[in-house]
Amino acid sequence: MRWNKQALDADDDAMLPGLSSNAGFVRSVTTPEFAGVTFHEVLAKSALNRVGAANDLYGVTINPYRGCSHACVYCFARPTHTYLEFDAGADFDQQIVVKTNVADVLRRELARPGWDRHPVALGTNTDPYQRAEGRYRLMPGIIEALADSGTPFSILTKGTLLRRDIPLLASAAERVPVDLAMSIAVYDDALQQSVEPGTPTTAARLATVRAVRDAGLDCSVFLMPIVPYITDTRAHLTRAIEQSAAAGATSVMYSALHLRPGVKPWFMEWLGRTNPDLVPRYRQMYLDNAYAPKDYRRWLADRIAPILREHRLEIGRVDPATGSMGFRGDGAVAQGRIAGREGAIPGTASPLQRADPLRTARRMPAAPTAEKEPLLAPLF
Picture 1 (cartoon, one colour):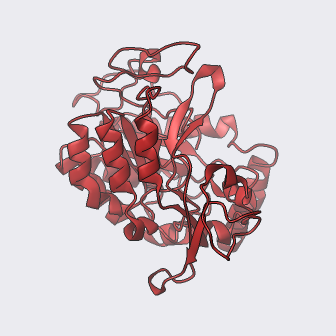
Picture 2: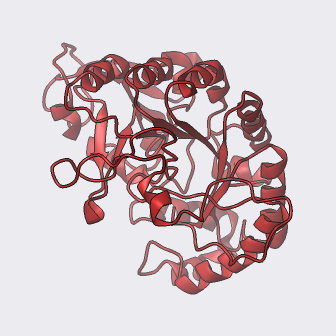
Picture 3: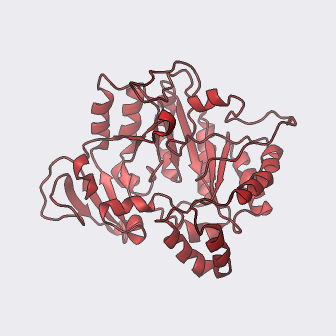
């Protein structure tokens, strides 16, 4: 199993698939409260992950869990479970790896002299507030460690368990920049339960956005992915943006469905069961590409832009290195270059905002001006 190099030694007779030794494996746990789900508890050697290196830009992430009980059929992270010799389908949903010591390891990493307080993103791979978090409570220790070290951070989640930690997040935001976003892609209850069967309801997530805003914190909404011919109708997009604005969202990010090779079979199986008439269209759209065709993306941008303007919401930025929010970096040192090639970049804006300062992640003025329509959002 490829995370052996990320683990400490632990003794147990049981092993996970492909595990060549017991290094790092503590135990596997099943409980009646999580029917059908197995938790594999491990001791992690590292907590911080550096991802991306295009044009020297990189991001830093934390993933306290591997696998996700949200069971979203479109989840781009499914293929990562095959590195653990699990499958990308049912195993991704039901075999959850838990890094039980992640907060302690993180504190040690953040205390190193070389740590430069680069903004850290959570929720970029699997959800840190999936149901397992209710049992393991890893996030409070992570939040406290980041805030205590002066490290800015962002959280993207579908989990309403975020509400538990709002007081902690508000306290952290007094010391470091904190960016929060709720992922809400589907605004039809039956469809939401079909395509995201393990997630909280759309209404519950919108209520979480409102709770975050009532606590004085910003909260964006990720309208991702927009599923072609299913959630791209004008009625659905209007409902999504209208409800996001009513909940107090400070920005909306959107993109069309992205089907990586390891995700495509699982999504297409769902599509064949629920919308068989769309299968030929999807085969044509995604035959040789993981991304929706450019013409479709332009059409989607033209459709959604006036709805955003009507509700005075602007599109936010997505960090290309992590897939999470383009970090605000208020009052912090925003680093976006690999150490040794270019040092810390002092300032109050992230590299993304410096590159395009007009695309702020905020509500537009009450009287919209005739500005040019926003560019296409980065793909999911």
